[in-house]
Image 1: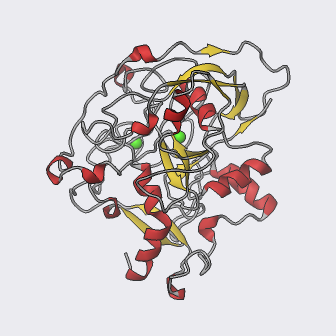
Image 2: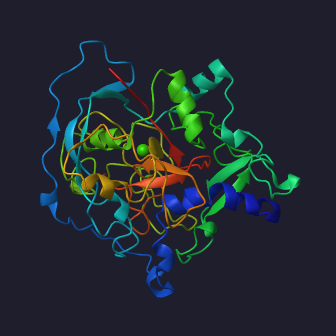
Image 3: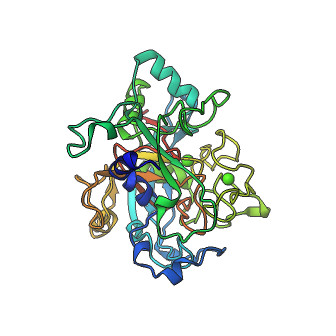
Amino acid sequence: MKNKTFWIFGLLTLSIISITYGYTKFLHVSKKEAAVQECHETPNLSDSSEFKPTIENKNKPTGKTPKGMVWIPGGEFSMGSNVEDESLCSIKGVTKDAAPIHRVYVDGYYMDETEVTNEEFEKFVKATGYVTVAEQKPTKKEFPTANEEDLITGSVVFTPTSSAVNLNNFLQWWRYEPGADWRHPEGPQSSIKGKDKYPVVHVVYEDAEAYAKWAGKRLPTEAEWEFAARGGKSGNLYAWGNDLKPKGKFQANIYQGHFPIKDGDTGEDGFKGIAPTKQYAPNAYGLYDIAGNVWEWVHDWYSVDYYKSLAESDKITRNPQGPDAYYDPNDTAEIKRVHRGGSFLCTDQYCTRYMVGTRGKGEIRSAANHVGFRCVKNK
Ligand SMILES: [Ca+2]
Ligand SMILES: [Ca+2]
């Protein structure tokens, strides 16, 4: 990475990377522990009795289901995760922000059956002339201490390491790439030609929100996202059940092999890197890639203790919209909203956020090549 782009990499994108991988506890892990990179274990189901059955609403809309969307009935469900071995090779409690399990009710809604694709996003851009944040030159106003020559348009791209590395420094496998944006996911020399059905990436929260508004939709709340992802089931580890590979078959585009080294991704699940949408079976509600492929922005501010605050109430929380403000004591400088579902880079060696109850988070104006979104619509 060039020196002049290093600072902007830090300012713009440290949080999206760090947060996405839930590194905060990780940084406190000893080098000896962190060096353990090959571990393939099944997460322990903690106390499944904390989960109560999902009670789906019975009413269905009489109107026509919008094209490319599915009806999610809504209802009452147990939200969150109490699994301790979520990631980072048996380092317990990495993502305590998904605990405790708490009871939530959401009204029914339509949801995009896939992540928003390049083809769909292009229609929006053509219709509106919209310019994403990654395509806009950073300004002095936003980065007052930066030198003018360092204000370079671009985004963050995953870059495999040349050899095995200790997983305690994510800067080793991410770079700020000048000219990277949704049309050029790997940098200016790359393109989305022939990738119409791939999820759009390098979109920040406001880009996702602008698309949703144009489409007559909105971003899901975190509760809506999780209700939909669970597919009417309760307490499962994954959107499809409790076995990562039922009958030996992967159900989502995640990462197998040695992370994050060059040629380390074996693509055992069928894809090295990002995949077109709809390559795996949908969940019980007909949603594709709700786990893996790309992270998905949701509406809620990220607050580390939001679930705890909801669980302290003895009432069922109805249609929660997230906390009033973001809060992350481990990183007070960044403004974050929630990401859900994990990505093609999630691996049992480092980040198992493809597990259905777990959470991610991202700085609201930071983009990367593993974050996208899908929308919902009221009936
Ligand atoms: Ca894969
Ligand atoms: Ca996804």
